[in-house]
Image (tube, rainbow, N blue to C red; front, side, top):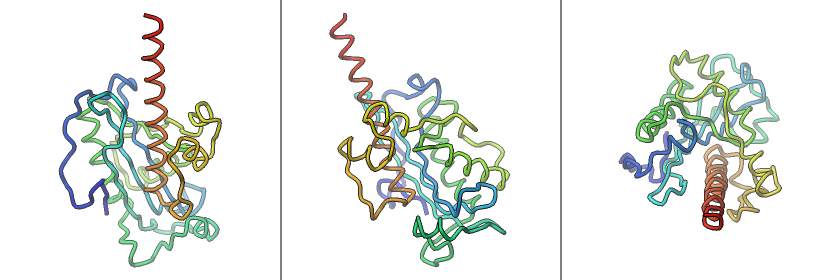
Amino acid sequence: MTQTENPTDTTEPAMPAIPIAARFRGYLPVVVDIETAGFNPKKNALLEIAAVIVEYDAQQNLIITERHHAHVTPFAHAELDESALKFNGIDPYHPFRMAISERAALDKIFKPVRKAMKRNQCTRAILTGHNPAFDISFLNAAIARTQIKRSPFHPFSTFDTATLGGLVYQQTVLAKIAEQAGFGWDSDSAHSALYDAEKTAEIFCAIINRWRALEQLAKTNNP
């Protein structure tokens, strides 16, 4: 399934008053979190993927505008690490997961990302995540397996909230950054791709908006 702010609302977001393209050199930040059945992107299954799209509001503050999420069926002959499944609490073959194939999941995630890129005049999406090397490795492996020719995401460039969190909040653990930033943290919801992606997006937006406020203050004090 795909989730937005209201899962029953299929209305597309309006054209932003201020396209985001100029802020990130033509890139659209898309916060991605992936839950898996292990650490090897070529052998272990991708089980869950979430993407949160961020855009400018009318005051040029970065906000969450869309949330998308899919449970994924393990690809053929995928290896399932029991310790990883115990950690994230996922039963890959539970009937209530309503899981779909990797190709279907990526198509559902990529479609709104491409639309957001277009309305923000961006040329590529850039995966934004917490320690995103893990997520982009699994995303790239799934793209290769499903033979998707044109991914909207840059193949290796990322934005990392672990690094940004260390700079701004003196913390690198997602839960600790969220608490330090005032967003709170629900341990029972953690390690759900959608929950982790939402928290990561909140942190990313807060840091970018804080930096902009500091820039504006500096200009005011030094005209």
